[in-house]
Length: 553
Image: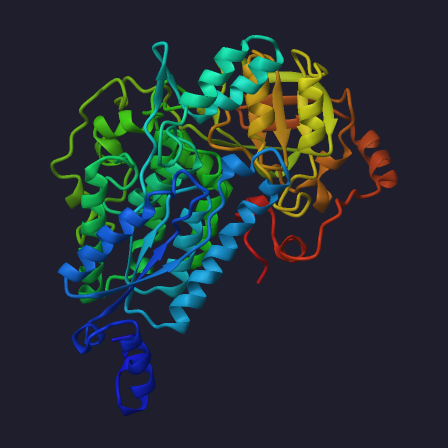
């Protein structure tokens, strides 16, 4: 066993003494030692209950003959970090999480690992760690929050962000605002729509690192506890069979993840995280491949913010596995991929059926015959940009308008709330990329305010930053190269015409080459001041969004 490095032999008497100081018996010490990476904290609603998941995992490990050891991982609540300097620390936490898990699992040579994430960057950070370490691993997430109901309307967190814009436009009174504040998030779990957290939990299930149900079983349902016990037992099976993360995460399973991503209409942040995950597996995802997969994959599911339904609706309709079954029927999946069930994708799907054809549509009834995400190219984004096209209104799929340029999210929000953004505009938010922010903040507050004001049918927003999965509208992010790296977005001026053509994957600045050359000759790079510490180091090390914003090696 790997753990024998710290517990076997005469020379390890001191080590066993320390283990016995934990209250362990000789029998427990002799068993396989299973690390449980628990990201519980009292800050994130999606993580508040993870100690319950952890205890269930421990029970499963013990039932299967292992000895569990819990250790923590940090987590940032993107919702609480949104709209201020704190959001600069969200994406950068992904690398820190991966590094800290590596440190713990190498310093204490566990035989296998169970990962308990739930929200945004915690999920990909843990997957990156699992692939880097490549010891038997199983993931079990905390599950999604239930939606709220108010006056017959289904509410999720995105409803509250849009309420900010509606309030700013005097479309809501004080009582309505208070009702949204009080009722939209009814309890623990990752935010109820197909935002980044739930997108990545679904991707974990599709890739094969999480058991069926991992992406959709609600946080408050007892099935989630049973799943956690099964995860604890399954990791012992993975150890016995020596099935490791890199056996599961392959080019084929990543293809399946991207295919499911398109069918589910997942967060645009998956385009950051899946390439980073691929990198840790020694693989590469090219943004051009994403468009090819999108063109071949019907959009089968629309959840908040793209539609009225929530993750709990998808779970009741059959969950991720039922969506995969539809994709299997279309011949779009690589079905011989191994998963943590111990079986293949094909074996997992053998008896699966969709239970609600309004929630999970067929190829014939799909929302569209292509996927929910698209990569755009053009002189503004020669290395690509991403849009969650499944959440874009039909009238904004093709748009041309004058630029309103801002060098920070704060300046942009002040302009929106001050009534300076008008119908037809293309809002440009720059110096918010991985290096420029630094940290690549999410622009949920601006996009939600635009939607709340009723301008999502006439205003687009483009940025070298990124978006929350809760963003909707013509929100185009990850523009690469970013402004801080000399991208053309740094040269855009107020009034410049920007052309957006999502069906044809185009994003263009309609300014002639002579004018661009003149601006380039006079250009002085803008650099935001950064305090000493992690942000400063991150800016020096991080790569572009089109690479997944991974660290330089």
